[in-house]
Image (cartoon, rainbow, N blue to C red; front, side, top):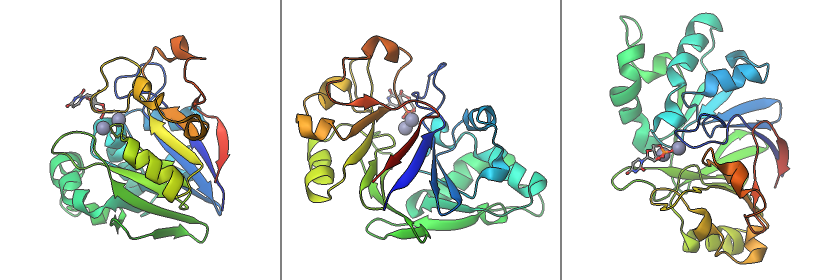
Length: 245
Ligand SMILES: O=c1ccn([C@@H]2O[C@@H]3COP(=O)(O)O[C@H]3[C@H]2O)c(=O)[nH]1
Ligand SMILES: [Zn+2]
Ligand SMILES: [Zn+2]
C-alpha cells in the first residue's frame, strides 16, 4: 500500500534555508502532518495551504522544530476553522506536551487541557494505529537525546521515518531486512561530530543496497556542498511529492 508524502521542510532545528523537518502524508483524501515545528505555519502557507487543509497531526518528540507550531495550529483549529482534529501523540509524551509546553499559551477558563483543542489519540509501541483505511502508523522508541523519549515511525509497515534519531546500524538493518522497508527516511547531520542525529559518515557505512532505499532529511544548511557525496542515498527536498511503499 503506497503513500504520498511531501516534506514541508527538510532542515535541521537551526536551519534558516530549509525549514523544520516536518512532513505531509496524503492518503484516502486525508492529510496528516507529521510534526509541526516552529516553521510549519509559514511552510504550509508557502505551499498555498492553510491549517484548514490539515486533517490530523502526529508528533514524534517534544523539540520545538517538531512541536513549535502546535499552539498556532490549536488556536486556528479552535477559533478560525472550528474543528477538533486528531492529535496522534505517543502516550508517554502527552502529559509533558501539555504541562511543559502548550499549557502556558493555550490554557484559559474554559479550555484547560489538550482535549479541548484536539481529539487526542495516544500511540503505543507495538500497536498499529489506523488513521484511514489505507494509512497505518506504528511508533518505535529510538535513541535521540539521553533521557528524552523520541520515536520513529513505520508508515504502512514498509516506510520508515526516523524523525530525530542517532545512527543505529542494528535498527536500520532490522528495518530493511526484517521489516522489509524499502523507503527509509532518515535524519542526517552533515557537520561532524554527529551525536544526537545520524551522521552522513555513519550512514555512508551502510551497504549499498540499503543506501538505495535511504532518503536523507533534517540536514544542515550546507547541504548543497554535499550533493553527489551521499553514496546511493538521496537528499529529499522540500515540496517534492514522492510516492513510497
Ligand atoms: O544534547 C543535545 C541536545 C540538543 N542539541 C541540539 O539542539 C537541537 C534540538 O533539536 P534537534 O533534536 O533537531 O537537534 C538538536 C541539536 O541540534 C544537541 O546538539 N545536543
Ligand atoms: Zn529535530
Ligand atoms: Zn529532536
